[in-house]
Length: 151
Image (cartoon, rainbow, N blue to C red; front, side, top):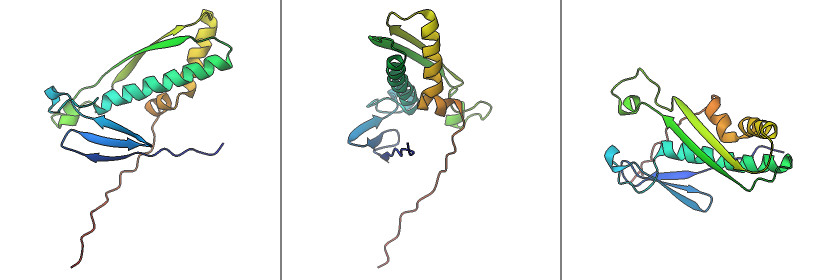
């Protein structure tokens, strides 16, 4: 199968609120009031966790089907710690992102512990969001200047 390309477009509504268009969907990204935002949506690092949960859910069901496990549902809890000093520009001793992410996956199924261990291993191996979090992905930021109109 050829590579798939995913795209989003975004614009700022104010200093903390970003509106993102993904296919026909609109996502609102904002900061909580205690971080200077208007609390109109989850913040960027919460969306990272949400995306990871969504990917785990999809992979959990795909892999369960492949392994002939009847997965009735799955509950996912996720949390990560990050030090805000770098993003605030007050210290550069710590990284800006999560120091680690703890994930708890609770499947509702009748599979054995051995089957579920293999299932979990496959989820971690095949989840694209997990892969992006575990491995360096090249990122190329480009500056696009607004063209001035010549009178």
